[in-house]
Amino acid sequence: MNDEVEIVGFISEEVKYSYSKDGVYYYTTVISTGRLSETFDHIPLVIPGYLLLPVKGDYIRIKGKFVSRNQKEGLIYRLVLYVLVQELSEAEDNEYYDVAMLRGFICKQPYYRKTPLGRKICDVLIAVNEDRKSYYIPTIFWGMSASWIRHKPVGTEIKVEGRIQSRTYEKKYEDGTSEIKTAYELSVSKAELVEVEDA
Image 1: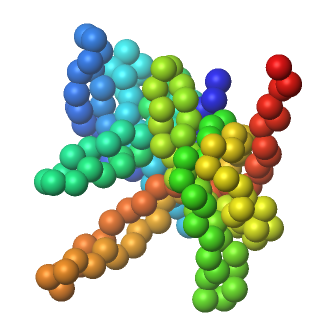
Image 2 (image 1 turned 30 degrees about the vertical axis):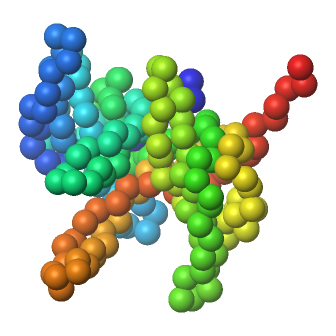
């Protein structure tokens, strides 16, 4: 598989019906999982109804895929990210785990920058081909990894491992108003190039 996710945490929003497809009902909710820094990431889930649905407050372990889709909002399309759950089971209270592994292609020129404190960061959009579909996953590289990935060309195939994280930011509009939004991305801890076999 090119896309594997495992998360342990607690359900922090009510489970709601979302849509049906090919006779299967799908539900949405959010799993919250802790970092070592004692902050929490809040990750959206889509759960098929044939799995045992959790309720708000349940500690669960899920396995699935980190996927994306384009959603039209007015005249623009927005990339919506979530974990499509394939397995779900109970977990111990106050147990947290968050690991995602992807294999895909760099599909946009990496964007390299430094924080005000001088920390190196590189944003890389990865196209993951899975189940005859392509999912576009924002990833973020840090430090030496950011320096390593910044010059890799579009089309480079890589494997990455890290954690899915959420972060809030303020989006300002031309009319002077602003809105707090949440972005989701894979924070990379390990990465390697996929070697192309000689024909």
